[in-house]
Length: 183
Image (cartoon, helix red, strand yellow):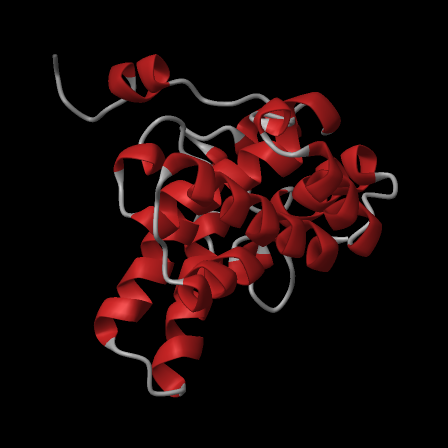
């Protein structure tokens, strides 16, 4: 499921980039797309940090171990680290902006109406969605349920709040009021 999702993200990102006049490095866009959700799976999810950072850290290591430049690794790291952050990726470099658009299209259907329907059909035929909605949300639950504190301030808390009985996110207000300052 994650493989097909990641490939669709890359292909949708490429189509959106063309429509938006962006010129991302296709190799870096592909690597970003393929690693963007790896932080939801073991062994990539064994740290107590946001899953986006897990995927970004592993992608950076993958690139550096294969002789890519620090700059290329940073582009990929940024695209993955910010892929679930609302509004910011669209103002970043072309790989980050395009991949975010691909993620939004595949996960939420955002921008789907702007893409050529025949191209979308080809992509989905090559990389079927199956029961994507159910399986995708379950992947989030499985990848985050043992590290719920990593969802603070993210959309990921929404998934646990919906699917994990008794999960309650701590709000920013609670964190400020509970801070060890006297006032």
